[in-house]
Length: 495
Image (tube, rainbow, N blue to C red; front, top):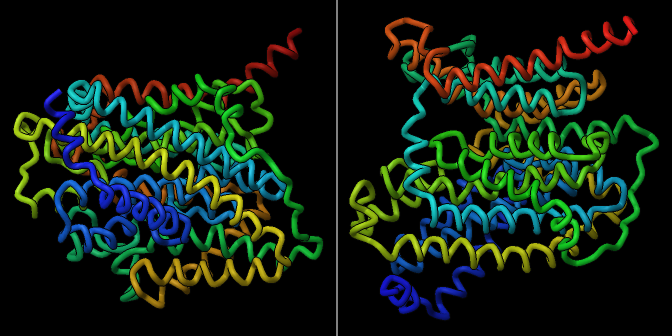
């Protein structure tokens, strides 16, 4: 009770204004291609350092929540994921927009995001000690297999057959290996061929913007039948659509939160795991890839529930769960607050402040995001050349703003051409993007760390309990894709 009273004593009109501002800035930053949640929060942190501690935390929480949702806006309307975690969302939301249901897609995104954020915040308050125990059970072996698990799910659920999805994922892994070695740094360059630009690797943002945004532009240039889609009206809030899928939303929110607790995994994998769970539970699997509401709910609820989960290792262990919580840690450090084993006992009211900030920010982005989303959908009514001109400008700005390198714009155009070729061959591009995300930092680095920690032995990869569980699941998933259709055909032939 005393902690709640302390929390209420910090609430003010200034704090509420900062939260509204944070949500608005976050939505804009998340919606702009290339300006990720981490970048948006980092830009806002420059102002937060001079704020009162409580105002700063609430402001940055609101910015994070807003930007996590904002990534779905450009993914839905322009097929350009504002953040990598919105790639799964684009698979369903963009077909809905092309069918004239853009407003409905954005309303469902907002409602599912609100649901996931709310469940994640409540779980953070209730089960953080258990969640920390789970994160401590993960070593380099488990991180490696979890990353591979995400890639296989992405390959399985993207458009195109499973083999093409695996090919795309492997290509993404190869792209991620370009540049400095993740273990030895700039002293060991790989696949740069003497090109100075490649020493920092191929950037995720230019590649993703090219694969989605520029490939859409190139497709419209070669498709003479492309037309502006009609814009249908829909209800302002998608309460009914979410309520009909409440159990799917609850399941993927819990899973998304648990993934967020594991440091370094993040919302990129959470969105695909949530999408996979929605596919498994859906009664309308044939709709996936063509505008499935179940898929939207699975992706958006999972990646928004992941965000609260990333705070658990930060508060209890002093280990940031992702890039955003690393920035939050810097704010805490500047304020003289030490995270770790004694943090909760020394700052008993902080968890209530954090959860309140997440919950209030969720309500704000539900209201602001839903209303602004309907206005943004008016973009679809513009002539197609105008839309594509805007897409080109946004792609160029997003690619360049990532690291202010002109070479990133070249990479964007190259991956735009690659995206066009992949479309012609019906190869999904989402596994390629996820392969770049998890390749160097998770798959490669954790495999080699685990190999060295195991004294050059591969046995721990299949003998540690969680690793073994993930291996079994992976074998079952791959076996189902390759052998189950053959067994069914053989059985049908026998009959």
